[in-house]
Each structure stands twice: as C-alpha cells, then as structure tokens.
Length: 127
Image 1: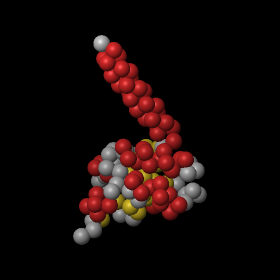
Image 2: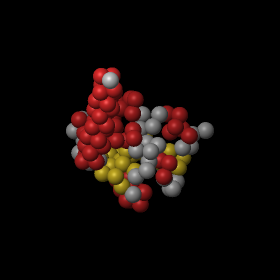
Image 3: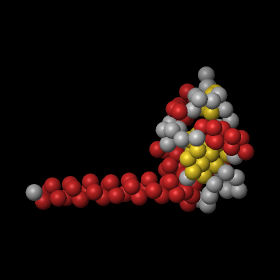
Image 4: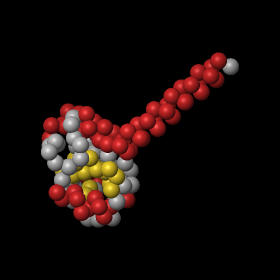
C-alpha cells in the first residue's frame, strides 16, 4: 500500500514539473503561425535544433543546424542582439532550446507552431 502512495507521489511530481515547464516555456517563447514565422525569420537567426540526420533529410531554407544536444557548447554562435527563430520536428525540443537560450540572455525567442512537420514552405535537403 505504501508503494502505491510513493508511486502516486512520483507521478504527481512529474505532472507538476511538466505543467510548470510548459507554462515557463509559454512565458519565454512566442509561438508563431507559419505565416508569421515566415514573415519574420529572414530578419532573424533561424535555428533548426533537430539532429543532423533530421536536418539533412529536409530543413527550412536558410536555417542553421545547431542540434539541441550541442546547443550548450555552441550557444556562442547565436547572437543576443537579434531575434532567434527556433524549430524542431514538433516543438518539444524547441521549447527546451528556448530555456537554454533564455539562460544565456536571449529575450526574443520564437518557435514555429507545430514544428517542421507542419511547415508548408520551401525546404532544402542535403544529398
């Protein structure tokens, strides 16, 4: 019986943490429709935080690939004085990337609603 209480406590903590992170990400990161994303990313830094193989399989024209797994080491490649447009496959990793970038002093953070899988614009593939 006490194992059940422990399990419920752990589950409750995980849910609470997830909700807090979701709300924090919404506070620091603006989610844009494809139309708004498209109209602004050319005047900003466009970062694809998916892994290299995903990026090579297809990415938004003009995007730089800085995988989430390398973001901490490569964060100096992203300027603080320009907006940052981030995308991943479905927005999970872009939210985590925004948290890291916020800690580095970035304040103008935007993500593509629905991620790359919802993108209907031009893409480039590496063959």
